[in-house]
Image (cartoon, one colour):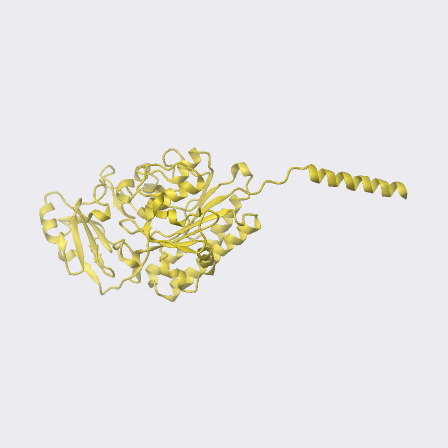
Length: 407
């Protein structure tokens, strides 16, 4: 049996030598994940419903974002990813019209209209710039990510499907990180909408909204566990943001536009916390006389005459008169539909209720810090810095978020 022992010894020695000489497996490269939680106010983090998010904040940096005007979903999501305010990138509202597309109305639900590049060409999303620079990207939902913009798309993306649960969204994103390294994204986005939906339907302080916070947090915990299982612990920069906050509203706090203008005088392009009214030809003076100025619960301006701090009113899609209601109030017109009376956004971006969450966590960020409020457009240069891509011209400043970064 000595020959067998000698053979086994030689074979074992050869195996050990082979393992020692083999190159070590490359560690996963550092990645950046932008997590957008629609309608997540900063104070939601302290309700005891979001331990995973709170853990990220405690291990990193916590702050709040002041959204761009108007404080609604599509304009601010596009501002976060382009660094441009809505009046520059052109997504001036969730519902809008363009004189270059007469008779066409852009809405969130009309995919046939939304696929027209005209709506998006005013800004270049970071995923396009990243792909041009050789940084692969993956967008698990983000407004604009399913359309070709500037001749480019993310390497991986999904068409928006609101019915897709949070856990499924996370699992799809994680599957992209299982791709071969040459195909694996290094910048990814992940979007959750149920906190906003619950806030609209039930109000920001309702148990149902707290339940949506908890459900979203569970999905983020699943994401963190999945990243750890893939060896990404300590190699992920998380940037958690919201597009706006949420304020309580009720049907006894309505400003009746029908009492001031008629269908023969103006078209109400949209109503709600802020309203856009397009006077019909020949009725401009009458509509302005009826609306422009301060009223009991809101204020209206001519296009181009809004307060400078709003940076709004020059784009061709902005209608002739813009009205902004006081917190908790809404403009209503029989020309438009009815909306939930629980919660709403679109109010003055400086109002505390409109503030949006910011968390930065990972190797690029300081630990256990809180920073001052900053404008949402500065998320864009922060993300460009994290992924090493030269930013396009934008309205944000890296200096605004520099206190969040590790030295």
